[in-house]
Length: 348
Image (cartoon, rainbow, N blue to C red; front, top):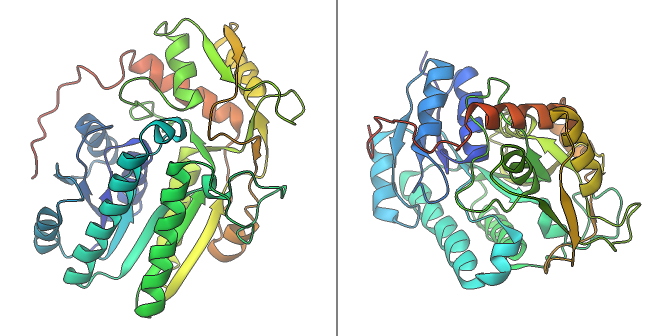
């Protein structure tokens, strides 16, 4: 029996590489498209090694519709899982044009390539950031969008585009997964989060700090209306996130547009996260409190009830697991994927 083929955009990145691994281990063939701007082909090599399966890899930008068309010509794709986008809140405040240009133009290019290839099943990487400064605790899928930064706006605008397409073309099936704060790594330590440049997320910064690559953690905001004054987030293990993608894929294609929160329903403050990570590595983490960062909000905590009811999905890993797995990857890769030899070319 022929295996279903999933095209994963951004498949060499943090969540994308873990999704590729999960799909391969569950009977899918995988094709990866990635421009390697904030990722590494070495991650795809590691995915192949862990899974014992080959991955077709194309080093292209999804804004290049002609190149995407060639990928669809070469592979009989059944479903697209779309991760390729810029993703840092703070960076988006400094580079709004780049975020709108990359995230929206890339999506439109991909959708046009899918339409030309008659591929109508899409799993879209969305974000809890679209809820902005939500007053609800926890946040449900019915909570109103209040995006407070260009990154969040780009995700909300992308969802509106996708909903409009499904309204116009009723045979399309699109699922948007609004995940909260992914962290951790695969339990093998072979793949993990390795951002280019200075990490924009707190967990990879913590692991790099513990490895001696930074001197201290700067905590943005100590006067939020939260129990300890620092921002509260719903941290979710990356392997739980990618399992959510696969379950959304396997319950489809369901005609129309669906959206689900992927979170644990448990809020953790930045200071609580720092204490947990310190306990995992067995030594204190140096930090200092700083002013709030523009675009950030006090608290984001998910209600995962809808994903549980309709997808059969539940987050199975906790904060300790996330910290342990993230630290394991860092210990095995002191400089990330840098320096790892890869024989992978632009495509194969």
